[in-house]
Length: 336
Length: 275
Image (cartoon, rainbow over all chains, first blue to last red):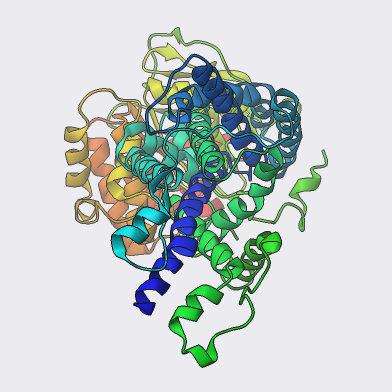
């Protein structure tokens, strides 16, 4: 019984949250890795792009809620998501037109793009705060739990409850669908293959008649969709606050680099590595160990390695270790 | 012109920038339309004069290169003679101050390189001429990107020409040997069903045996009626298979003739075939 209780507690506080968080990071990191592979720079504006997409989705959600539109047990935000994606896509294409296209024309070095993206980041940051404000916003509605802790306790007869929130379920399902669709697109469609070709060898892609501007445009569209979905899922699961999204940049980049920049599979693996490390290191293990260990050895402290305030330190530490020992990332990326 | 970001120590952090696979081609200033210009050889760059920048020195001096259907044209010459430059000029990657380029009865001097691909120029660069991360078959598919019709037949023809590629069709092209990579590169160019095939040093860095095999294949391609124009470092072997040979010296035509004539020409032999 104690062993089962330990497993349930572990699932409730570590496994499920980490899988959900990992899916969100993976979606974010996929966007970063696509930009890195195809446009050849690290897009520092990605976190704020996610914030922008989530913001538009939230505004639409509020509007739908005020009109009485609901999705029943599912959050209304899912209904607003396509509009968020459209708005973000339009915004990304406009940014590309105004900022990045010029640097492509003059064949600027990739580092110039990185710097430009930092500028875009600040502007986007300001725009989001200007429109929706810097405070925390809540927009989740619908059924809160798929399985609530009490239901689970009643059903299983265990002491420990297992809660599975709707937002977590939606996150995981959406992430699986999006990732599968993206991989199918990249590996099986003509356009997807032309994107990989462009990433591999720009000159030869040009000699093969692939239009670079079209590849770039499709990349921005896909990235806009990925960023908005990641942003909305994160907002549903935790909460929406522009500053948090800016901070998300670190774990997202850590995920992309740990997995191997430019490698989509790596981005996903990296997302889960970072998420699981963050959650396990900042989790107070007292409860789980209490079930597993004999009473005499039961820990008196919280057995929390690092306070949650320092969770970003975990991503940072992993990032440094990976760059030191395996700079190409877990899956062979293009970095270094 | 100072370009500080090119210096060593700058811009080296691959965790924020990805210089791999970045475009290095510098298209010329051309951006016009093709005009009809009937007559003359199938592909000809006539009296081409120009260099790599608007105001820079002229690397080519009234240089003429031509090739007809079913022929193999070979450009040879000492290092720095402007062999590759001449090929680039034909492909629209040079600032031409004089001369014209005509293909199949059309004046294409003002076309961009991309537009020339559509017009039927198949170009195989000397290096970075395959998509290393993609499979052999995907490489060929990408070669046929501009085509909207069924490409399977052309792909079969390429596989018949290079049987080893059929065997390795699902392997990443980057894992192949040097000679096989060159076959992929030529195959990719053939997939567009070009009207003329231009090869920039196809045998650079491959062993003599592989080189002979590649030349055999190139002859085979030319026999189908497709004109082939190539720049070659291995002058003697290349001239042996050439219908037309161009010896360039300092960006100008020094000797022109059939491959056999050039091989027999004492002056050519002495000056750079090594006696």
